[in-house]
Amino acid sequence: MRIMFNKACLFAVIALVLTSCASYFGQEGRRGVSSSLVDYLYPDGQVPPKHEETTPHLRLPLTVGLAFVPSQIGTPFSLPEAKKTQLLEEVKQKFIGLDYVKEITIVPETYMRSSKGFEGVGQIARLYGLDIVALVSYDQVAVTSETKSSVLYWTIVGAYFIKGNQNQATTFVDTAVFDVNSRKMLFRAPGVSDIQQSSTLVEVNQANRETREKGFELAMADMSNNLAVELDRFREKIKEDKSVQITHRQGYGGGGGIQWPFLLMLAGLAILRIAKR
Image 1: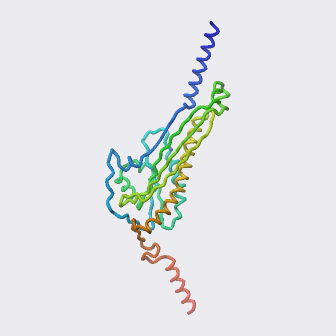
Image 2: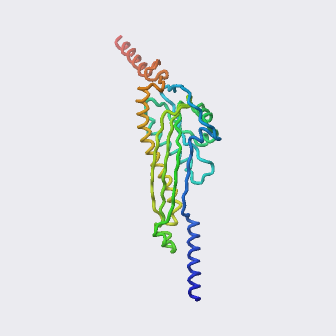
Image 3: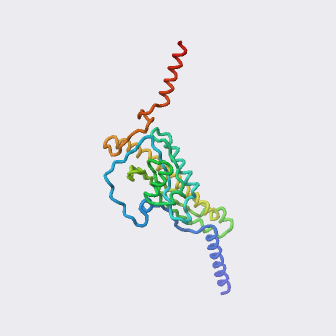
């Protein structure tokens, strides 16, 4: 009887140790983080108004603002702002070479949090001189679970060397491009990713964080590819249905201004005439 009691105590101690280890190194669970474009543009339960029959007017070349839609403040599993800036910078580099884009500006999340709604977007647009804004919303679910090999965690060696945890992150991002003046969405592009990574017990927190960040990287890369496709479709669409008015700023594309190549040509002709004399 005493032997059975000792065994029961031993198992209880082991269970307590395992519970303590799981609490210290990282528990199993499902965690999520998201940001809502609708809640950001129409805060406090506002109802989106009916779109007026106005035609967006884009003057080329465009100044574009690129920003993440903020998540709720205090969400422990949100991406650091530095990581978000890095992801937006990668998107920017893919589109910065377009001849009809003058500049792409990454808007800090701090500015995005300062005010919501289209009024807030308008303030940011006036601050940076933006023509259109591309707002990236997201939804990510991260799950950490234990595999069968996690039974070996009861040894100290097992906690350090046995990869008994599975970390998974499913990520969805969506970029909506708006004309600032008309407040109309021009087009949108989604991106998705699903990534898994195994880890030891002592690595579970770090591995979970790396999995979540990698999930965002892959989803943003997928979104960038889709955004390029949707941009081409948008260009062809407005040629056919004239749903967007396009004009050129002075000095762009022969839009009425004297351009530098023309001035250089005139200077060359003048020098040639002087040389002949």
